[in-house]
Length: 287
Image (cartoon, rainbow, N blue to C red):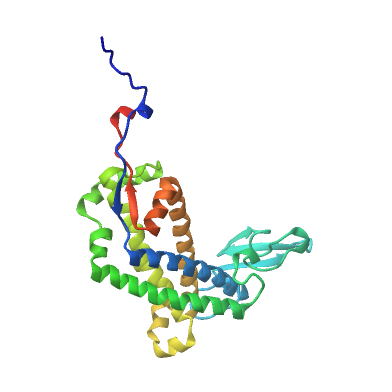
């Protein structure tokens, strides 16, 4: 007499091996890692440059009278130094982090701490050298990659939203907030929030960062005076440049978090070898 075999839960059931698909081209993978290095150098050296005059303004002139943002050390009523960050009329005590940082017995009066800048010690000249070196790799690389996306068809195939995706935008956003990611065939393609994020970064924020950076060069302003008109002054361009950098940092942080929670090994393999394992479809018997 034969008895039926009992399966105790999903752990006893065999699943088909994951399907490997080609997700990223060699050009995309190369640009990704070179771009990541360039952005790290640009950010840290940019903070070093900012420390030389830790304030932002709108318009053409720069004085400490009415900055849109400032990060510096100020003495309090007791004569003690405090790190103060001002955003318009808002005044924040950021002692130990911004404006005044380091161990209590050896705190330094600088907008951003030494560990966040390149180089660590105060050096405007060396910070500018690092910034320009990375910038002249990043800017042509960005232009080349955008050209590759447009002419190679990657923009149309992978990043332009489809009409049906807009109807499910709310549902997709809720899934993202709940850390529920596409599985099976749906994981072959970027979803709408991913597409919108990449389009915003690649075609708006990054080019704006490059243009605003170029506007701060007196030599380029002389050759292309329309840059100053575009941003409404050199100090406005500097503020836009800083805000673009802040937006890129925010994108980077969210990007890394999503890579970690959605499968760091699979995502890294895709960006190193190009091969991505599609997460298996959910089995209704697992529910």
